[in-house]
Image (cartoon, rainbow, N blue to C red; front, top):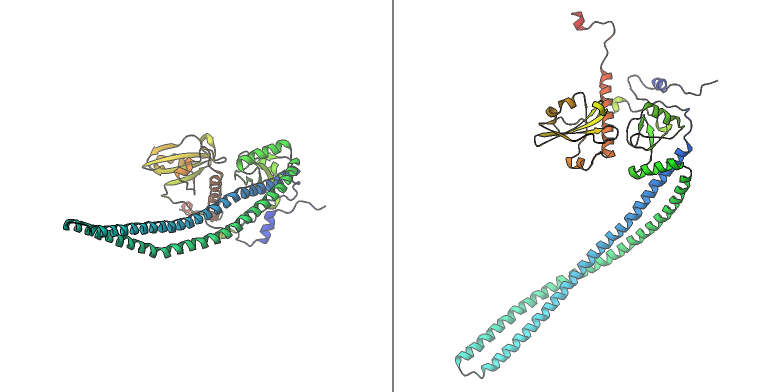
Length: 410
């Protein structure tokens, strides 16, 4: 009887790969039992939850979009009203000037009539002076009216341009509002369908497991995570070998000790034949003189594996310690005089330098736990750094056995 177990993948790849090309191969057990029905239901439930959240976000965003459209239209209306108000103000000012000229001409006529009845030369000169003053006022006011007339054409053009713009924007905005309402109606319909599907999926999951999934989803955005290469792919924390093997068997539901997500194993994603090493992109190395530096320590007192963050500022160095698995801050922030290399030499010795650069202001917002994006970034760079170190070690040529070294020969 033929064995159901396939030949070793390492043997398969050694047979088909050219000499000198190095591959990392992850073992795949094709005889793995099937995935638990509850896990399959949870995966479908998570897909439904993601789609429901997407639709809810889109529905919530549409009123904001309509409000922004209406604010834009209101701005155009305000521009038209301002142009029309300027035209009306000019018209009112011109009527005021016309009234003023009429009044001044009435005074001139009155002064001339009075000049016919004066008895003395001084009285005549006084009336003549008043007449001349009124005539100057009329001339100045007429100049102002002429200026208003010259500006009237520009005002009319502004009004017409604002009216044209308002008409075009009103038509475009009405079209966008109709599209937004149609999109909202379609989203609401899809939401109703997805919620009905979600209720059916919930019925296929154990109540305790469902309660755990929903609690974690509310806190972390997702409640179930794939296991791959002995890691929880959501939080990137390595699993204990026993936990990893138990998840692979698919006989019971387990959760990640770090992020509390329900774990599942998909064999289709486990086998990865990576690119040859000479094609692997080179890792970016952090600058030696950077004011901030991140390190990884495999053992750090009673804390185990940790990430260390050092920062130089104003002649002092600060140190933060984060748990490598959870990203939680361990202890208080320690500050010493000098740069971090001289202030904390005992912490740097034997540590792996990593890429990481978050401002002090940003790290203060983290509180007692760094965000998952920052923790994932450090884990990815740590894996690249360890791979690079391993590659350098394996690249060193070994000396043939039985051949004495130069030191031994001498």
